[in-house]
Image 1 (cartoon, rainbow, N blue to C red):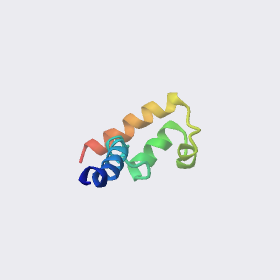
Image 2 (tube, rainbow, N blue to C red):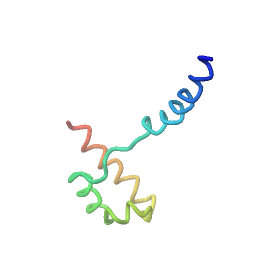
Image 3 (cartoon, helix red, strand yellow):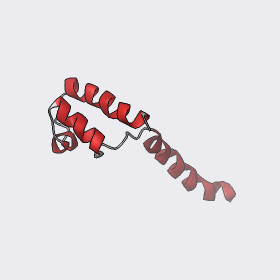
Image 4 (tube, rainbow, N blue to C red):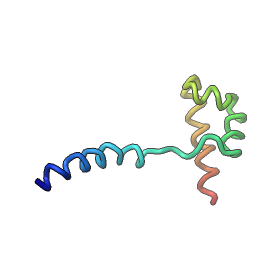
Length: 70
């Protein structure tokens, strides 16, 4: 009986764990917005997934460099 009760809990836990492990830093901080401006796109374009990969890669490096300083 305990196995039956724990199965739904285990499934939910396994399904949620990758989402928590792969989260990106916030894209709405002042530093992240400054990086967007530097690479020539807006927060709305980022949210709409219209930023080309050649701009997204350097933006992520810039954004992440700002979060490591703290």
